[in-house]
Image (cartoon, rainbow, N blue to C red; front, side, top):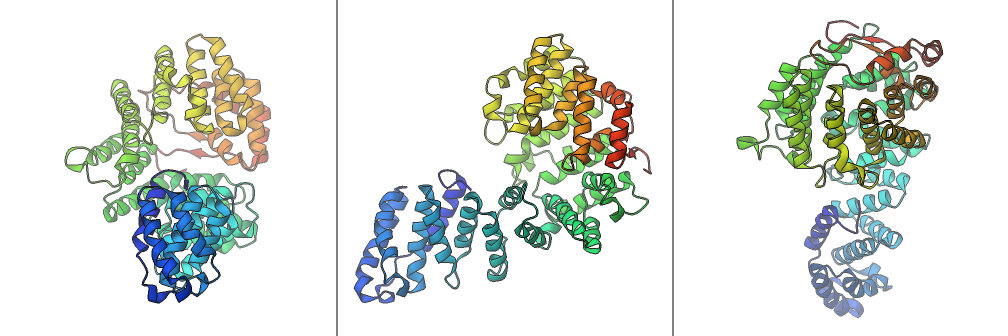
Length: 502
């Protein structure tokens, strides 16, 4: 949560102001009662004009007064609320957090106070404290942690990257997997898998198996089947195609109970494509076309519209309808992404164009991103751009451009290791690609992704050309050094999702 700007601050600010009703002076000690009654309306006036420093000038002396603790709770809460918001707005995290904690120590403190405390601990680099706050919310508030947006919870999980032995991380995973939200929000699936790994590492195979059994994501179950430590938690006859079919059924169930989420039909169509049913995917997406009578149907339309077009483009691609796929991607690009220029579908369109042999067109598509990509995209997104651009440049015979992309990718391999391998394959650098693949197979954090890439899959429909690095990947898999690394990593699998069985 960024308290310096954005919708989150405004939403919390409005909620805080709504609570800050002028107190009855009878609630206050006589010696500061008049100051309290005078200060709050002035502070409110400053807040309505976004003048936090003026508001702090009114509330800070009251909060610092030794008599503040003797005031009625209904008086203290609005003062602490304004102090918290405005100290945070000035990026003074420590005093803001002190005020937020004082507020939540008051019996019956409102949920917005807890949300502020959690947000400050999250942004202030105190993940263990944020977990303790979630636990306190779950015990204290009637709705538990429901007020905390899922995006914030996922952000907290990422704060433990590299520190997953922290006991607070395990408590965090336990709390979230027990939450009712975990039953209905697909984003909690990864949380379940992370918790299962921790449980298994600590010797609790029974509970780890239960967490794996609650997974609906076929992609995650595929990862489990490739994990030498976890695969025994799956049935011996695990069938990936059947897993996708179960996932489709679960997503369809959720879409009936939550018809206002565009994300669900997008996910259903992705699973249908995964098992070679693009006609069904097309029907799924068209039934949810978020225009006309359905334009106001979906609460997540603004954030998911470009991904609806992305799904439609991928479906047209699988159907061999190249021009329709290009047009769908261009619709997504025109719409934008997260309120700014579109990166994801621009890169995806370039991949499509290269796959169909239109390398110069792919370079033209990517050209508007080139100058600003390092600033506009995430590190992962930048690597996707470099992969798409490098493969297109190689295909177009512009080897100097491809070499520049490869040099960047190899220097930033930690941002997206698979992209490095793929670009090396695109450029026919098979010795280098073998080295990076072997390194990924030896790395516990990257091993499963490498095994998934090296596993055998049913060939694409005959009307589709192969992806630019398909032949190179097939050659890589036959190398003795790569095969030995695969064996050390636990082995690959054959996934024939277009026909029943594994």
